[in-house]
View 1 (cartoon, rainbow, N blue to C red):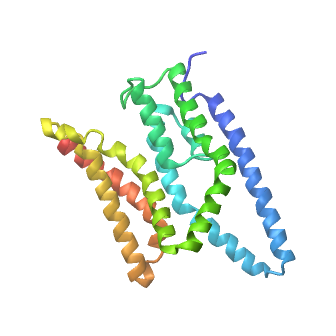
View 2: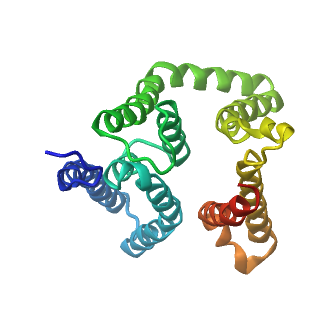
Length: 244
């Protein structure tokens, strides 16, 4: 059987896994509803909470769909659909896939063979699982340490927490600037990801400011991420035509 990144068998396997995840979600939703009724919460209020939660899942779902479409060009739909529907994150999956494909010398228009496809799937899947066992091993100790630091000095606790977050973000930002030095030898392609990032950042800031300053624009806070992703990716088209 010839390998195909969009083979129907891959869709069947992925659909089976996602069905299990959806079943878990429904199970805990029912349990939460029953527990809410036991606590005496009005059913109208519970319905409103469930409806509001469902509506606000649309915003992050848009960014996930964008990620699936971006990765589907080289990996098909099944693998990105699986990775971004279970244990994964948009920024990690795209970075892991692009780094793995680049390490194997595949360009943006090259379709991987079966061996290369499995390699990408392993990197995307096994690496993200590190967080699953790190949480029970380290999270309690870190949380305890942060609680003690916050009791001693809340200001430094906030600084330390912000530093941890910025350190994590820096790991992803590095790839944006990896080809930036090429501009010194007359190659301006390295500016494209930097400018795309700036466009996304500007959109994010505008959405944040409007959601805080304008009463009727507070809904923008929930759609800032997909908006910055869409407009950032859209800006890559004219930027590539100009610099690429």
